[in-house]
Amino acid sequence: MMPRAQFTVQSSRRTEILDITDEVAARVAEMRVDQGLACVNVAHCTCALYVNENESGLVADTLRLVEEMSRRDDWRHDRIDDNAAAHLAASIIGSSVVLPVAGGRVELGTWQRIMLLEMDGPRRRRVTVQVVADGR
Ligand code: ZN
Image (cartoon, rainbow, N blue to C red):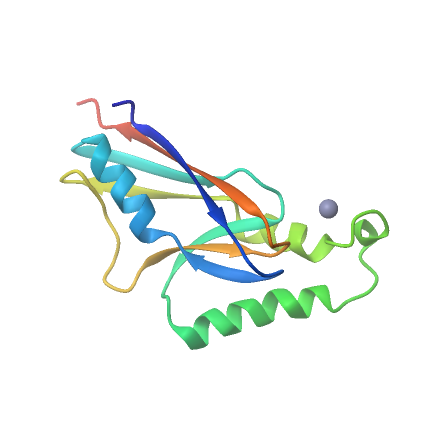
């Protein structure tokens, strides 16, 4: 199997946070790469990926930050698309995360989860997982 996989995530609200850790971990495990780096990317401009705890209060706080950005009514991009805050948050947070792969598995801390932050949903989002094997 090529060390690359894609899957889609369907959001159901304008702003929403979805835990994609299990999906990513399953795809990485299938690739049978012992050691290397996994790049997880979401190929969209109004959606982001980050690694942090999936704790309900923190999830709500993260959504609140994004929603507070969108409460401003003077973003220039809103003149054409009404989703400037989503673009800005995506730029700041980022569209990809890189994680170590060890023993054939993506390595995360005890409380670390891979989270997809939807900011312009509901939409179907495409996630790519690509692993670069350590060639030594
Ligand atoms: Zn836009």
